[in-house]
Length: 312
Ligand code: NDP
Image (cartoon, rainbow, N blue to C red; front, top):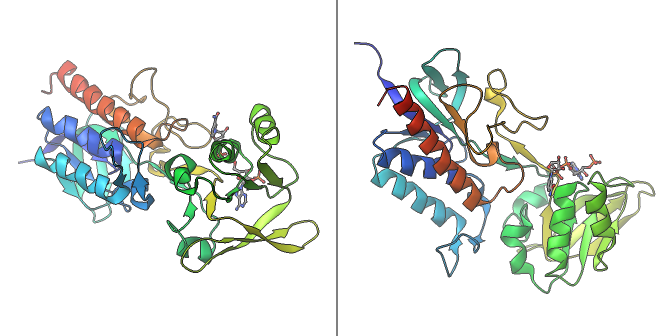
């Protein structure tokens, strides 16, 4: 007897992956879900989630992901704590290879591998993660209401995070490593016209300061080489995200930054039976609730594909 072919295999275990699993399982597709190396995805490094509807008191990110997982398992999703390391989308049946050498054959694939925030790579940044260091102002900004904060970066994300925080905080220090911002003109204008955003040009972070929680940052002026300290209880790193899509580069269309390209109003990719959802595909909204939404769409698209091809 040959190897069994899955109806639906899901790669990734953030809100998109688990939501796809819930829908696929309830549709009788007996999905297998591979969690990847960071089970639960970016929400595992978020404290309170207060903007996901249905949790009026908010919920801790890791707890929320445990609940997502429980709900997916309740409907018979088979979960593997493994990475998918290789894919082969050359035939009508798709092949996936896991890190342990398992080969998976599947009619449909839902990609929900997410994106990872880029970090500066400082020891102090890692140590103070969730103790004032964050990569998401929309998620964590509220906890710094009324306090002085620091944002690092000069792109659209940093500009957006700084203007968002400026509505909550008396002073936002924006650290830009060059003498100009990479952000679009309109975003730059918005930053420069916001009176409580103080831009520190040519400035890089030497160290995030604080023992138990962030108290500020030691910075260096890249031109004068002068070091100084900027106070702040929040330290937001906004130097970009990297979608986790490397293993698909030979098979699927992606934009310059590596985000997977899907059809209009759907999660279809150029490969029949392969669907993309969540932050691996969405570089604009990047919220748990939107990721869950596209995960749902991907499962529905997979189900329709299987029915249209008379596989179910
Ligand atoms: P970008 O790659 O555009 O910008 C990253 C910024 O971080 C740059 O200013 C870069 O500096 C700086 N940076 C990188 N590494 C470091 C470091 N180690 N230390 C200090 N600074 C560093 O990323 P974004 O996330 O801002 O944007 C990604 C894409 O998403 C862009 O295409 C953007 O336009 C888009 N986007 C659009 C939005 C919108 O339209 N509303 C909102 C958010 C993003 P340098 O310039 O010197 O390299």
